[in-house]
Length: 278
Length: 338
Image (cartoon, rainbow over all chains, first blue to last red; front, top):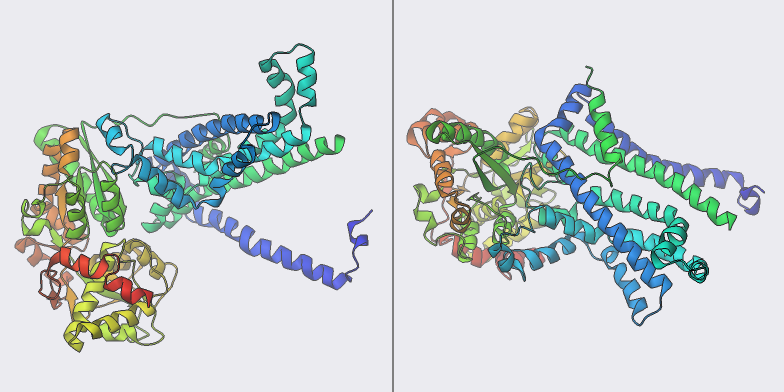
């Protein structure tokens, strides 16, 4: 059954709509992406490579990898726990908790960053105590990680909750009846059921964590070679008339976007197949 | 040309993230200083930090690494207040350092600790226009004409923007004779501003790279630098009939250096700014040097401008100017909201 047979629109209208969609995608998505790589390579491969191994760029890449690994790890663990708690048990305040999970999506990242400055900054709630004890949170990697964790918090939980709700608790109950303990139920029953959705959430979380600008910008302090992540480094290079280097570093994020997109498509096919199978 | 594996490997590394955490690299310098500065000084301090590292090693035998952070002057001051670990601050105007001093991080008399109001170099505000000056912009009057787009950063966050604003105020006050008329002038000027960036460099990029606007109100050093970086065939500098003497000051952040034990190095760093080499570097990066000898050497580089200072009775110093114009509900808020 061809999809178009359902619709009554004449062929010219159909073609016009498709052309418009293709034009918009081409103009606003493909063209800028191609431009990133064109600019990055405008002075050749050698210049491209040297922009990436420049010490400040390397430091930005290292910091981004560290922050992303920490926040994705934390959020995967917390997302699992949250989804588990929400879908397998019932308790008062459950719907409120679900609302709270979405909070980072509705708060501007800049505000999120400022909240951490207000809490952990020198003038902030914990600031004096932190400084007296030699802890650096804001304007250092822990603050950048906190801000990233906040911004990317919902991704894993949001992917898992609908799926786990749909799956219900029947399989777990069966496992318990057969004598499996909690950990065994989790690793043998729950985790295999949700692994693709979990991976999907991790993927989105990862992409956002590496690309986050606003919240990180507020808590970074912009110290060169120390507290700049890849997106901040891109801005700095651009503002210093080093356009080619800026696009070279930006191309890392563009590559990440492409890899994420492909992986996402593959995962969606996987999840879709499972759904149809059920 | 066999470097192709570099980007590919880096990209693969990026793509695989989620599993690997790499620790921050260990730096070998004996002393590390952090200079928290304003926006357009990036190029100056990149060079000056090398000079200092060299001089300090020669004098003390210790290696030193100076890290830098740049942004809108007001925003940078706020970061230091919030705990950014600056050993020295080199900001766009005295009020921003006063704000840090008010929180007890810097001694109140900081501006008297170094010569020339603690400002080792000066600058002023000029206009950068498109090549050939197609809109015929000659003086402050031309900025309020209908259809002229003026690019300037936000005075709330940017030091350069506050100098821009005050220079315009001084001109209007002198020309029209009353504060009300000066307010009307600035209100008209800001009606012609399509976008307020947070820092001077953001505005420069908006004007030069994104091609927005007919005239950029810019630090003189910033205007010269964009000519050097992007080509003298693209932009002209217009010197208005009256401008302001901008004194970007420097200070050691007492509380931070005492905690970190870096006072000696931090003080040496600022002192070097006043040396012949330091002054030369400033002039090469288009800041007006204080040292008479170096200033004489670079005399031809800087156009003669009629300059009003911040201590002129029309402003009464930075604290008063800040309070009158840029505090919440001040003149800038009044003219910008209308």
